[in-house]
Length: 286
Image (cartoon, rainbow, N blue to C red):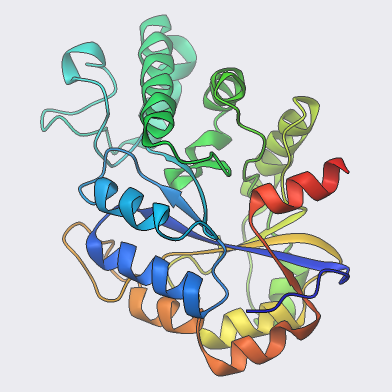
């Protein structure tokens, strides 16, 4: 669709979990071709990753980034190389709090973490896709040790943009006045944004998707677009044409997919510039 390049309101619309399953991949490509989706974050070790990469190469307008998975997912490295990051089933641990403390106090955990992060960046590089941006599953890059490693390793792989999940509550409350919470996430998100800025890595000014994760329906997406602040915002979503094996309970995947192509959403985009992370990162440099 046409974008208003001169607008003071700019928007990146990102689909997380690209590669999780064909149902996700199909929704991502259709929403990019027919709707407002401009970017997708690839899980390089997920079951549908190869399919996602093939589809992305046929759709060069889609900005594809790396969705680092360090919890509740499959690693790239053999479990023998990262024994403290995974559980008995060979997948990443699900106890984020315990894992976070272990990363802070155990050098062997940090070494394994660094190796897995580099392996995921390397796996993305091997796809031949341009690295549009970086973020992390469950926003685990809010952890300062993970953030430090992502910056150090990512820059060596050409990382120029990343998500710092700082969601402005005052805008959400104009849509849902009784909404509360998120103070800790905003505090840590601001620290991450400062770290990324010092490293010369572009981040959107605002991010939307935390409070309503898995429930970014047409009404909410449209209301957010109507209230976008000046600057570059990101709305992240989890579209899929249907639920799939391993999908999160309670997530309304098909509703999020529909929202990205809804006529009432498209009609609101007249004064909003749409683009990928790379697009706005280059604008910020010029």
